[in-house]
Amino acid sequence: MGLPREPHPRAYGQPRRADAHRRFLGWAQAGGGTMFHVNHEPGAEIHHTDPFAVPADQRSPVRRLRGRLASPVTLWTAPGPSGLTVSSTLVAEGEPDRLLGLIDPESDLWAAVEEAGRFAVAPLGPAHRQLADRFAGLFPSPGGLFATGAWSDTPYGPVPTDAGGWTGCRLDTAREYGWGLLVEATIEVVELAAETDPLLHYRGRYRELT
Image 1: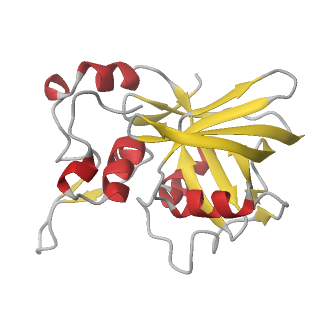
Image 2: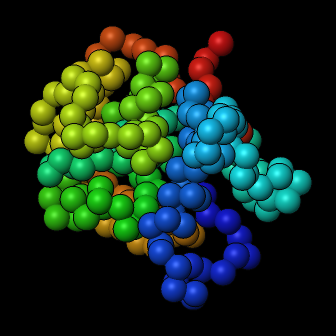
């Protein structure tokens, strides 16, 4: 999911977390009805798209290609609790079954996962747009990320009670991969609820199945 041929943020002492959020979670800024305040002066405009977004023809071909791949929006959580919206989750069947994903290596979630050695992953649905923005750091969360909504406690981390299900994973390994951290884990528990439609990320916006 990283961008090619760009200087690594550490080379210039730039904050890694801000860069990673822009690269991995910036797609949510243009979706889910998120509003962008241009300034705080009286009469300021509110936009439903990012007025500071790089024009499409100036983005790298790889980034544009990535934008054309529809991705499921998931919530990763860990004991603590901590959580992060992730749109790069992949499940691989086998013996054992595995789960992989790209996350921000400087996120609070990774610190919690590294300490606990386990985490939960829940696929999100159309009703979770605001929740996805909140855990991506794009929507206010007074009282904390888990202060609103209904949550079910699990040994792997809290999960939304209205999610279509969740899986509990044991951390196996993690390594730098592109601009992020490739997390590999073994699936230990799968709990499925009633089947629900997924929330998707496609070309910078939240999408639904039609």
